[in-house]
Length: 319
Image 1 (cartoon, rainbow, N blue to C red):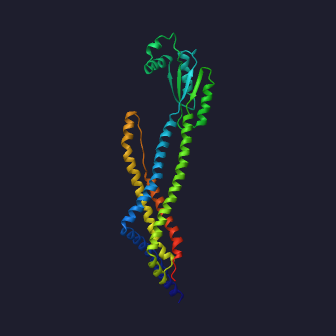
Image 2 (image 1 turned 135 degrees about the horizontal axis):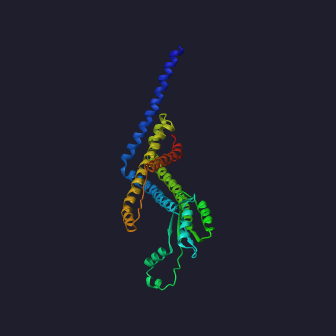
Image 3 (image 1 turned 180 degrees about the horizontal axis):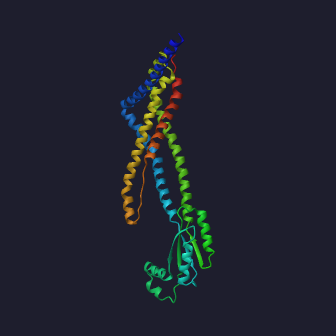
């Protein structure tokens, strides 16, 4: 008898699980069909969600490109050494070889006084005035490129050690503008984080209001369903899946908007790259970014519908 009871319980449990999963599938399809049956409302809601999410998405792409460019700038940080005027060419080149052999130095470039004066003559346009000078006022210069990935603290220590060399008159490390740039980027990143939170809250309100209107339009249907014994969880599922669909389609719409904006400015960026003879690579959403956007928008849709259903469904009770 015990064995037969166990055998009867297993099919009953399996049937309950199958019925539970079947209703989830039916709710998923039913919510999609309800969205399809009201195209005007769906298009407006999805468009508003897409536009709302595209703003933080666009800011994210902008910061992503700025961070990539600033990383390239950081990798090309250089130290410029202006030697004393008394040092001759041979001693200056010997000093260059000594600096080049240092552990924190990747490479060095030597610019003689004559080369510096000739470059200044060609770029300044004061050729005749320079010819009137009795002597060359420009010093020998050594441009030092630190190793890749060096941080600001290590670069400053290298600067101090080079500055202490007797043959060096002035040592200059142009990192202050980089520090300003990183500070501005940090402010921008925090601003984008705040904007993203605010717009995410706006998406919750949009989807919550849409689901609330859907609940009100099906008020009598919900009353009848409760009268025949349906639980709140049973009634809640189609609305939750409705919010899920709104969030998913809104995320896809946001991605399309950002991609259209990228295509719109890619032409001027390529033209700017040609004018400055520089390789400016402007990146857009990666596959990971795309998946993150869809998951985030879907989660927002599900959360917004859950809040709306939890608040309004419990207020509907048959009298």
